[in-house]
Structures are given as structure tokens and as C-alpha cells.
Image 1: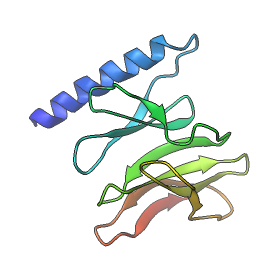
Image 2 (image 1 turned 135 degrees about the horizontal axis):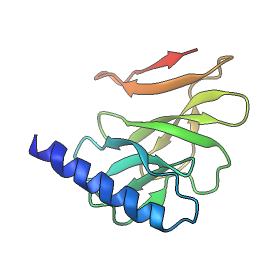
Image 3 (image 1 turned 90 degrees about the vertical axis):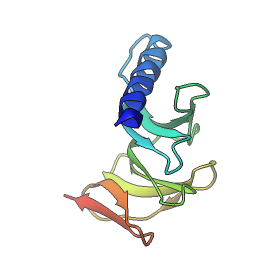
Image 4 (image 1 turned 180 degrees about the horizontal axis):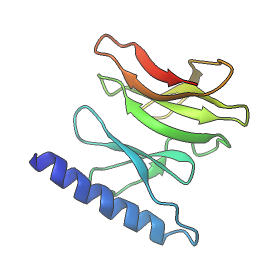
Length: 129
């Protein structure tokens, strides 16, 4: 319970701090804690961002993309992040190493694949519409 309260306070501080840096704030959304609790992934300004739990050191996971990115989810080992990315043809799921690197597209179904989660054995489950 204490970690949840501290996490919520840290996320709120991060959202307020990041929104103050932009003239058209949209707010940080969809927070996801790394399994070790040392990093936070979230959606902000249509990108997946990573930061320390206190919001410091925030940076986009893929700074050069033009995709709209949503709903990050950490792998159980903390090495990868899966999220929904829209290139203009609907949302597909993409996996990127949590330290940055090459993206791997997991799904290319017609329609939207959203809200991914990892299972304990390393599979990704998601919603499709």
C-alpha cells in the first residue's frame, strides 16, 4: 500500500513537471512500473517515456519516431517494453529493449491491437478490435 501511495505521488509530480515544460500540456498517462520498481514507463506527448520513480531523468524511449505510442507494459524481467503504436493505419504492438534500441513489431492485424500485458512465461496478451 505504501509503494502505491508513493508511486501515485511520484507520478503526479512527474506529470505536473512535464506538463509545465510544454505550452500545450496533455499530461502523463498510463504509468507502468518496472518489475524492480526503479523505473517508470508512461505515455506523454504521444510517446513512451522512461524516468526514475521520482520523475527525474525522463526521456522518450524512441525519440525519433513519428508513431503515436500508448499503454506501455514491462516484461517480467524488465528488459523489454511492449506498447501500442499507431503509424497512421491503426495500432499495432511494438517491443523495444528497455534501454532503447531497435523496435520489433509484434502485430500487424487489421484494426487496433491495444492494452498489452506480459504473462509470467514471456508471452504478450492484448485486446483487439
